[in-house]
Length: 194
Image 1 (cartoon, rainbow, N blue to C red):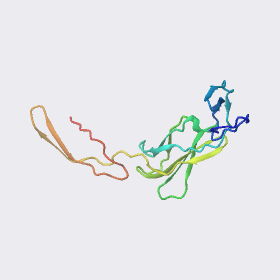
Image 2 (image 1 turned 135 degrees about the horizontal axis):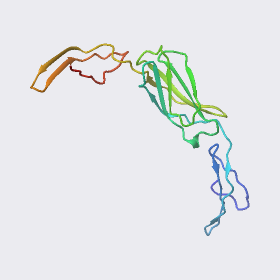
Image 3 (image 1 turned 135 degrees about the vertical axis):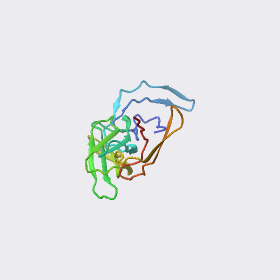
Image 4 (image 1 turned 180 degrees about the vertical axis):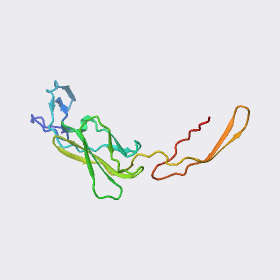
């Protein structure tokens, strides 16, 4: 409360965060001004509650073939609301109705890797990440789209040719490998000579 009547000797403080230690001081005031604050009270920890803040920046991708890598920004300690804090990771192939659920019990975790040989490279997945503690499961993030890992290129470049440009240099050229939804984009080429 902002101002308490001078005849009142107790007050209820509201809108505190769960599972956080607080200390309190009291200051007397009158028409002349504000006096010195009291000594701090003993530390008091509020009770635990179900977490209400979901992780942010849900993303991922990359990884190896047959992997779905999911990442998020961890929830800070003051928003965990109790002991036994962890993350709930839910994902499903885009267009599916069934969610797969995994629990990540580490407070510091910011990544989950799902491995399954049946995952097609570069497949889109709907992903959401939630939180829990000893009091129960809390809020889930909004859905993000994350792609599974790419596969290595399945074909060799075509049309390789070489042209001598000097006594010490040869220019090598080839046709680029077309983009393939299942194997991904080509990030570079390696030229070998013998």
